[in-house]
Length: 410
Image (tube, rainbow, N blue to C red; front, side, top):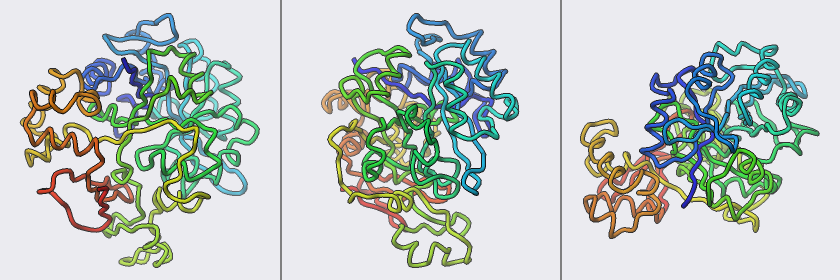
């Protein structure tokens, strides 16, 4: 049976995060989704760390448990520093093998920022120095750059990032084994940049509310402990790491270029016509992930490396049901049908990815089954996200959308 992991989430102590992002609600959401392992997120925050100590039960393989959900100790930090004459703002995820190591890492990080101010603290510390610090505390701990393409706060971002992993991490690049693709990019986009070939690409939800858990995730062939997860990522073990679960990247809120205030959404080619200036107000456009990939790509679209981890796109089940019912995602009617389906068929991700069509037909309406099957086949239309505005997926023919930034994927 597959083992599904979502390594990167946030607690209620992160800014702009639901009050329900506590251990109890995370456990309940993971069961609904069919997720086996969840990152704790925010272990740098002292109050959240105390809750983790009180509620999580250590397991023999370096993981922790609450209820039926396994947890791995993770935290995202915001590194802000000057390098090569420019300010850099990069988010990184720290993985730790146990709470003793977490406390030692936190003690070291306190020198560089206020850990109580936010679950994702801002540190005046270079990304390479972060890797050095973490490795000095424990060779079992490791760092993964987060959502590497987003315009703000990422390794390869257009505004404050670098042009390569090596440029950022220098001699510590050899300790970077994995990269998080983020919601606005998927593996095929990353495959266009040959310098990324040696890294294992992972995908996580970066959830700020329980309902967002598992919107992106990682699927392994079997239960893995902490050390095994580290080795699978380090070696890019394709036998144990089966595939990633992906947003349609066009749905990510920084996929295309644009200017939210003016409602302007442009493809990279269209942006170049305007010299990356908003045609309505004359201000600079926010350059999106697709534009940035095009700038760094040394391969044509469609290139597939021989040593790659597979992937599968999905649309959250509640969104499919909401479109069928022509109701909001958070309405009672959508929630009732969602819970009925996932309880009967074994979790949302199993419904979306595994349950055969004939079995789905016994539990859901023909329209919902059609929606699920069309997503599996990639038969969707997406209005592209831009400048902080999420894109919009359209699945059923009667709901075809028109407008700027819309792409047909079938």
